[in-house]
Length: 238
Image 1: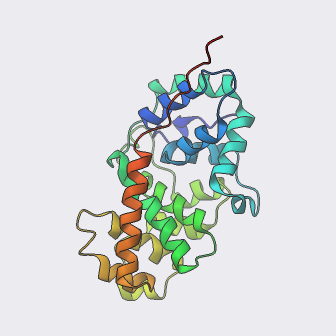
Image 2: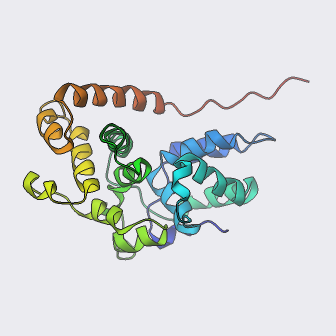
């Protein structure tokens, strides 16, 4: 497997994440679980890996981190390092603040778990990638339709609908696929006035308002922890 060229969809990984992975690759035995964790927080990098090596049927049931780890290990440290070092000349950064996609993704994941949605990692990816399909950073070529990107990753078209569909009325969401309602609820919990949105999110998700508030508070703590990328191990002194 070769990594996907970012010229295919232009947006590039988060600089802090890419530099952290490069530092983690500098040791003799890279910590692949940590590298996978950094990758899972990065919209463009996670998309590129799945675009290059699509999911097999049912593979996401193993967990997103395991899926990404397999692909990262298959690429290997040398090729992964060369790929990341070459990214400074391609792509654009997305429009969203760094933490926005991660907050939305974690909200989507936790809403999926709380509501019993059967594929929570799909909800996470929909939350993580939603900003990519709306970014103005696609400057050198038209943005591929979300349905094509999602299909190329081995994911179902309902995820593409969740990426593209926004602004639906609550009444419309009630009859839509559950993933659309989950992502819309996650979007509202990502807003600056998320506390004022709690009642609407409760109606969309079927959860109690107190559960929604607790969930969003937990996500805030999770993302605060994620804001600090993994420490680089210090080589042992001989």
